Structures are given as structure tokens and as C-alpha cells.
Image 1 (cartoon, helix red, strand yellow):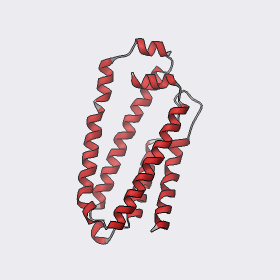
Image 2: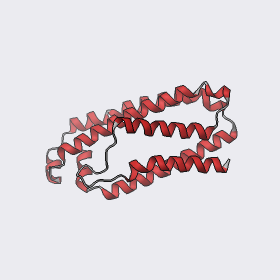
Image 3: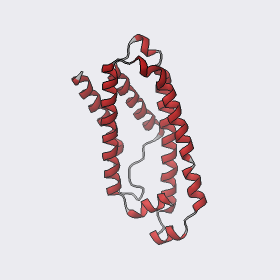
Image 4: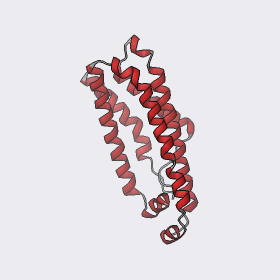
Length: 176
């Protein structure tokens, strides 16, 4: 079990690394992956979770719904991040004082309304997991928990590194 968990964690780290550490010197910050690359990355993550779980034949019938919910959530997240990058790109020429002076509270509220879509995606993901999760053995649940903790740690580290490398002006534009 430990070897499988280590292999899964390593594979997850390898798939997360390109997005976490790919940096360019442009004003846009990190390198942007295309839709095909993002879809491939999502498929890799799904494959890692499935391989860590080692589903039985009875459990396999529940997996397609989980994989589809993960894909839909990832696609919506990628679209949301692309909109943020577009906003940052449009306003990257402005100084911090211009950004603050020209802020639009209505546009800010509209962007925050994306939270409703995020909530829907999470609900669909939970609904997809609901029939599968009770069928998992204690060992499968333990492996899933360990993989989740590892992934959250890696995402937190990547976010922290990203925040440290970005200019303060870019974060002001995002908050606008």
C-alpha cells in the first residue's frame, strides 16, 4: 500500500509541477496552457485518483460519473481562470493608483457571482462521489485521504510560490 501511495503522490506531483512552476517573464506571469494541455492534465489527475483507489469490478460502474464531474469542474475552473487572466492582461498597463481609481464594484460583484457556478460544480462532484464512496474499503478511503492531503499541500505550496513571485499590481487588478 505504501508503495502505491508513494507512486500516486509522485505522479500527482509531476502532473502539478508544470502548472505550478512554469513561469515566463511576461506581465501575465505564469505560462498559459492550452485547452488540450489542460484537458490532458485533468485526465492525468483522474487516472491517478483511479489508480490509487484500485477499484473493484463492482465499484467501476460508479467511476464514470465521478470522472465526468471532475472534468466539468476542471473545465469551468479553467474558463474562470482564463477570464481572470484576460482581465489582468487588459489592465496590466495601468498603475496601482489607476486601478484603484477606476475600480468597478458592479463588475467585481459579477465576477464574484462565479461562486454560484463553483458551488454547483462542487455539488455535482459530491453527488457523483455519493454512490461510490460508501463502497470503498477502509484501505481505499485511507489512500484517498492521503492523496487528498498531499494534493492540497502541493496546491498550497504552488499558490504561495505564485503569490510571492507576482507583482502587487497584478493582485490589485484581480481584486478590482
